Image 1 (cartoon, rainbow, N blue to C red):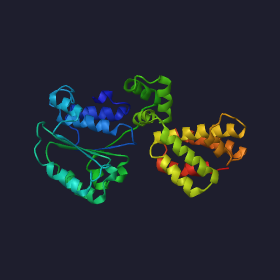
Image 2: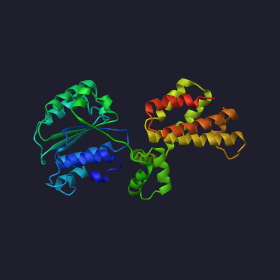
Image 3: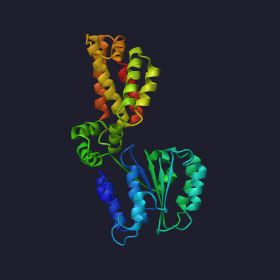
Image 4: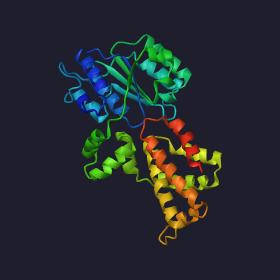
Length: 320
């Protein structure tokens, strides 16, 4: 994959293309952005550039190094992930620091991909800082993080920070049509819209099927009926692990609340779950809850901070 194929982020692509053309890509790069916005994909493209042997455009995509990089088998591209046990602890960082001074195996450069650096604790960051301050030749460090603010200022100051944002919904749908050719375009559009154009989260939403979200929506409805703040806050915080999941939970809440309203007004085909939940609400409270769920769905379409959104969602669902 080349930068021209990377979705959205035109300014980032222009800057990186110029740097690649001039062979002036920084030795340390921090890529920040929400889950699913393409951080790992961009990191992979930059790593491919690092090992590419073309004298012209890099990454060329056709040289042996590029082909190995795309297959994930290049011996000079190393991956460490903060979500894996010990992936970015101080011992792992010390090993990376030591190996960085060893010459590349095949390519002219080595690339270290450090994913989910939010999980890197301060001692590990301080250990990593030493190799950033005195970087070896022909080595590139590419870090991904939700927010660069989670890293030490000294780490940030020695790296180029790149911020990624999801594409607009129409552009996201064009990408999704290629990735999921068997899906209906209307389904893709609805899913992409609910995920704010985030391609990774949209794919996750479509492939997961939404059962986990529906189950959590039912638990939230039960807690909302009790108007108990603490249990409801625990559940709404679970609902906002990413935008796609939150959208799925809200869709589940919307469907379940509508079924509860139908049950209150005597619909015989309502599920047992809806009938049981409906008995805990007054008609007025259910209608207000529907209104608040729609309000929460509208707010999610904006670029909200998901941590704050979970607390706000709890308050909104308790409103009478």
